[in-house]
Length: 263
Image 1 (cartoon, rainbow, N blue to C red):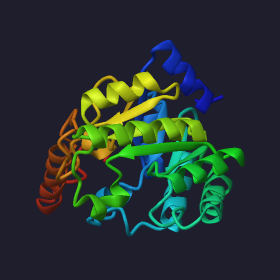
Image 2: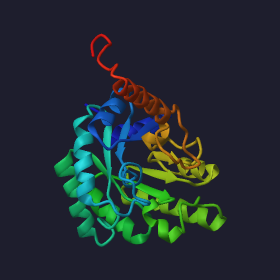
Image 3: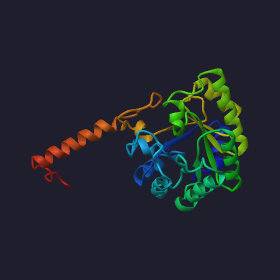
Image 4: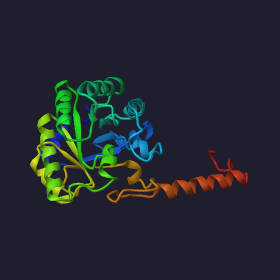
């Protein structure tokens, strides 16, 4: 049996950090799963990184269903979590139930992720979890609210804002979320929330003291043309792939391709 939401809670209790990465297709999901990643998030960052949009807002539920199905086919062990796209869960609890239900029924993902900790969202999280749909919450910088924030700015930088995010996190745990993403907040706030909650915190630009960390996989691999300030590339596949393609192109144009053994 693969990683479960209950197992993530045990990881936190045991002090065992949780490894989370994103995937949007079968091939990458298969590679990440075999590498031992604990959670694979089919994130709505798909809209920007893979589809070329300026924000995550244009993404549809059908887009997410399509990509999550592909990811799930490549995964044997990791927990698969699917982002609910903008305006597929904010309108009402019924809308959220319908969207999340489709994700679990049609894709095989084990959980959904949604953004925000305001009172209406707390009711949504509570109702979803009561219906047996595991929910990963998300506070701090919530990309679906990019226009409200005036861009992808760091959140929780004042005492008042930090307290609001802390209280949202506490409330989301009480509502039934099994874990919570903390994005682009001060490291001391990430530590405070992680110590306060019993559910795992997954940081992205939230300091080293969260219970786990998530990166957008193309950022980790050095594929992205632009990276947020908190991303850390571990290689530079963009240059490596460019060089490989240029070498192949040169061989083809010089009619040398096919000379090597096994070609």
